[in-house]
Image (cartoon, rainbow, N blue to C red):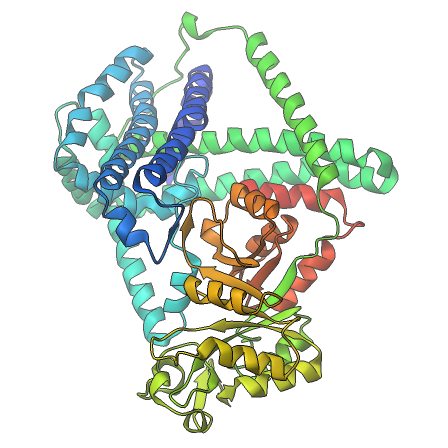
Length: 589
């Protein structure tokens, strides 16, 4: 622990002494990231769609899309650009730290040239090791370095939720995750070794990291934990101190709260950018110190060329602060105070109930859901049963295909979930209960391939029988069937479910249900122009719910309708600006 403390103190000292170098480097990195990397990615995507003739990419057509030779070439190009960006970004910081810790003078151009000499490995088979390395470190990198390109890369929630639905899935997920985390930590020193040593390959760097971490793994984990803990505590302290004036202003001078909120948010945005950049710098310092066992040096005096005036930097910072403040004031003033986002209970209310059951439906209505989503399938006798999976295996623990069983057979089956049990219901049962509770249903038609030819007319007739055609919603992942359904009954609100979408959506339906990972600001605005409603699924954490409720999307599909309703209620005209500022910071960082 004594050595860990020395390493941390030396890292802080080096960053302070060479602070102007870090300001220049991080400014260049951000400019390159936001003015080149992100626009290039967008342009390449649009080019791929235009060349291939696809309007947008979904889970139905993505295989055909990625099989196109031009798309393969462009994907390889994007991967290469991403790898090069991460290599230059972190490699530059590692080289700076290496020279600083040894008291060696350096200039940016020679460091750049040293990195350029290793680029040849990116055009060899060894680049695969670097891809694996970055994939293993992605969870750590996206948390520690949220301002890099790794921030938005994650496993879609619907995949992990399906895995976590069963005990075997949770066990397998935990096992695989533990193994990958361990491998990631063991290989974490690959990049600093590769960038600093001029004559070493990616593969040899990987092997050296593996050997080193075998004896220094504990020390490495302790230092990373110290870094993260200190970083989070500093963020918390600065946030509390900075927002206290806003807290007082809202209660003593409400008329000045809007301007104060804009100034506070701008200040915290700038501070957080600095803190995350500082974390990257600390990360590089610690990694180099651990890798090369750097001795603790005495006080290093900055050379004369580093003693520059701060006036230009302060002026730029002031201008950025004013611009951000004006943008935030305008945004906060126009923000939606009373969102009309619908709260949609996913498969009923699963807390304390089994999904897609009558009890779950009743609980969802009592929790205040505006709509209750249920899954239906057609049985072998042409009826509609409320059930999600194609088989009974997960919930009933027995074999049996829904498409091969009658409704009467299925209604005798007892299903279990999270320690609770219930019976399978029919669509008629759910509609009757929903009408009695005065709550509308969002019916998702699951297509298994054995439906009767008149499956859509039968469904329409069922809804017409209960006089709910004008109040219910019907959706499916089968876009062709939903287009047919809309033509069949124009007054029925029909939507298409997408687990994946890239590119603009232009469907002749009333709403789109899209997995949250693929929802962008641009898509939200495009759908509002049509207008087409957007339902986002499946949102189960407060941050995601708050994000999309504040964006005022048409609906949020969630397993926690009570929490979503409470968050929507708080988003009212009387909500303090302080809460809005904190919400914005959570969204950004």
